[in-house]
Amino acid sequence: MNRTLVKKARTMLIDANLSPDLWAEAVGTANYLRNRCPTKALRKVTPEEAWSGRKPNLAHLKIFGCLAMVHVPSGQRKKWDLKSEERIFVGYCKTSKGYRTVDRKTKKMYVTRDVKRWRRSSDCVDFQDSGSTEMDLNPSVPPKVDTDSNESTGQSPQPSVKTSPEELRRPLRNRFPHRNIFNADFLLFQAQVREQSDPISYEEALNPPDAKEWLKAINEELASHHENQSGYSQRQGIDYEDTFAPTLGYSSLRYLLSLAAKYNLEVDQIDVVTAFLNLNLNEEIYMELPTGVGDENNKYCRLRKSIYGLKQASRAWYRKLDDTLRSFGLNRLQNEPCIYFLRKNKIFLAVGVYVDDLFILSNRESSKNELKMALCERFKMKDLGKAHWCLGIRIVQDVETGTLSIDQEQYIEEMLHRFRMSDWKGVKTPLDPNQILSKAMMPRSDGEIKQMHAVQRSRRLPVGIVSRFSDNPGKAHWTAVKRIFQYLKYTKTAKLVYRRTENALTVYSDSDWGNDRDDRRSISGCVVCHSGAAIAWTSKKQRTVALSTTEAEYMALSHAAQETAWLRSLQSEFERRAASLHSYATTVEPLASAPVNHRQQGQGTST
Image 1 (cartoon, rainbow, N blue to C red):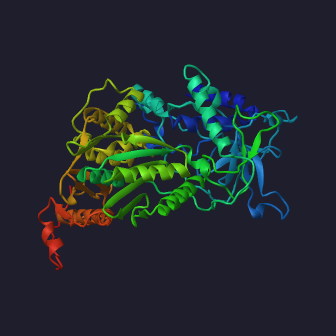
Image 2 (image 1 turned 90 degrees about the vertical axis):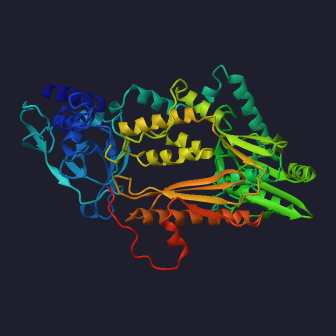
Image 3 (image 1 turned 180 degrees about the vertical axis):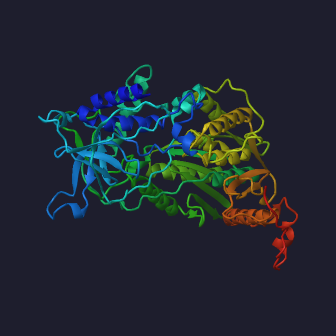
């Protein structure tokens, strides 16, 4: 063990170009890092975790020998002295959450918590070649090495430590455990998660085999900039402080589609070409031209109009589109800013807005065409005809049979292929009932699978469960994620079919009781149906611990009532019908219907 640490310390000193006089610090840091790396002897568990029972915190790790800008406390400097000074990071303090740093000029050692900036440096030669290797060190016992070996590193000088009273500005928190605790499947999956389907640089875009297509797309985008005269002068327009822009949610989209099926309305889709380039700017903003645009004498430009990436672009586009649709006589829903409607002389017209995609449905084809023509006069738009694809959802409408179905089969197949899971065997359930997930035991694939519950509600709960552990995952969570992907493959052909029915909003509520092993809180779930299929569903952990199943079901019913109230506000603009709310627990009905105080609700203990 001693030789292993000395080899690591020697490599660290050479890499940082530091003097051998800092060998004790290098050995201590090497041992500190080794205790936080998985080992085969402990079945790929770190010694730190085996000792303390907790995963080691890796958020504070820094490169040995890097430069640190350390804040100097007011009591240790004069009025006109610098508030920070540059030191070299050489290790971690064992008695406090601080860093061991050495001054490059005085060669004194400090322990500090307040470091403003870190940067890797290769210019530490002046520290090693300063003409003298003598340092302000007091001969003492070298730092104790926490290993299971009885070997000793011998006697050595020990730096005098000067502790800074300052506190860390940012709290340390758990990060991902070392990647070696996962198997080869996880490493392959993790690499695929990080893999980008689109090129991330100009040079990569020009590599075969898609170089011609990407170059064509670049030229078309530049042509749009020139057409809108982007980049030469300033004009009045939007306010930079406004950055938020609403988008159409899944529930709102599904409600529009259910209305289309109920009243047999065809849904059309139009796309605004380069929407953000239609907006004027009143700020003075300059942009560095990307590679392949301009020359050495013209590397910067001043923006005349908005461009993709500006914080105010989305908000400004929404405001402009909102003013345009209102000028056409459409009204915006009070509780859904991305749905507009018009009722006039037996004409019904509704528009759903998702950024630069518009979904139009009407009982008269002429009304839709008039709106399309009016929008094309204001913006450069592309008429996509009947809606077939939106937010990863495929839309299939059959006017003759009066049905409209949505599914995510194509999206799931593409995702499984991207993660090399196309050949995996599907399973019938999204979670293993015999597996218990806890914080004491997930790779960042939850961002991909979060979109998978847009069609099938049974995918919502498992995604929510595994997402709780995304900041500190373990092997059990990775196994749970793989099972969700297998379940997606098994259910990829699942569809929601809306029909021409007269059914009103129907809401179903349910809850478990204290199944979370970490905090014993229950999970509420509800499903809202309209036109023969579900349009909204939620799965949410309750805020407090329920003392009984009845109390858990009652809180779930309250959550379902909130969801119903919001959807009723949407429905009231289109149709006047009551909504029915149901609970799977019969014991909740007296609580919800009778205005009395029920003190006894069958309280018990969750085991």
